[in-house]
Amino acid sequence: MRIGILALQGAVAPHQAKLAALGVEAPAVREAAGLEGLDGLILPGGESTTFLKLIGHFGLAQPLKAFAETRPLWGVCAGTILLARRVENPSQRSLGILPFTVRRNGYGRQNESFIAGFELRLPGRPAVSQEGVFIRAPHVTARDDGVQVLGEHEGWPVALQYGRHLATTFHPELSEAGHLHRYFIALCEDASQRRASG
Ligand code: GLN
Image (tube, rainbow, N blue to C red; front, side, top):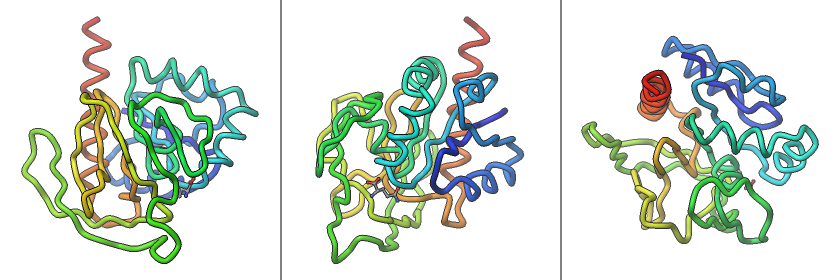
């Protein structure tokens, strides 16, 4: 199992440490060739506008969309913004892979960053309590029917799944629990088995 971390910018090393602890190789990906042979990819937190510029500069938009057709992506905070179909506050381009709308910096100025617990309901697993580290996180303000909500905080979806893809508006790589990394590995294994059985 090899799960790449899009390493143009942002919080890369903590994801690599989490995956390494779970026995998964996690190469940093900076160009399209780096996607080859990967079972999944994490788009980490950072600054989505900077990511967008670098994705354009390195010609990564099409390769990422093609990758998403057969392999799982997991967007974390800014990564979620990049994957959303629509971005507001202000509106900006995105990869448009996940059918939901996000509002950047949804928690506003006085509460830009905070830590809060909530119930995480991963399909096929018992519900657990998860710590959420929110850093200038977006709000998911609208979504299509096929988008599953795996956790909410104050009524806002903070963990979502769409088919093989995952999105979290908080930073699970900064908390001790490994539920979401383990779950993403399972999604990647599942997708890899599907590809193998044609
Ligand atoms: N507010 C940032 C953005 O809009 C995201 C912050 C994060 O990834 N922690 O890109």
